[in-house]
Length: 83
Image (cartoon, rainbow, N blue to C red; front, side):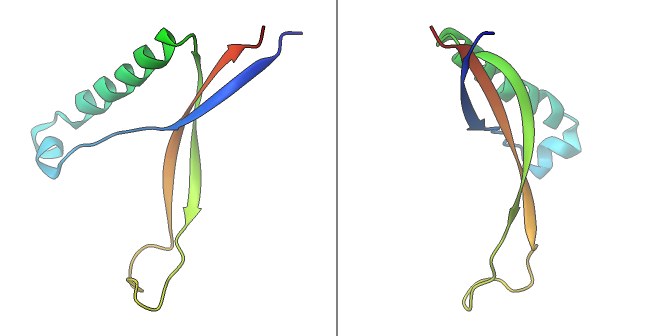
């Protein structure tokens, strides 16, 4: 059985409200994902999966008490065989 090492990186998906209105947000996100895939492939990593991580937001005494209680952050998982 082959052993692997893993690298987990934040999925960067930056779009604006204008991008959504123009219908180009999906293409911008796809391009950003593709750039991550190419970058890590050059380092010998293969794409393994995308995992959403639910992050709870602690409400501080000076923080926004009306904001969301949690946010979902998507991470990209890459792996490569350990030699």
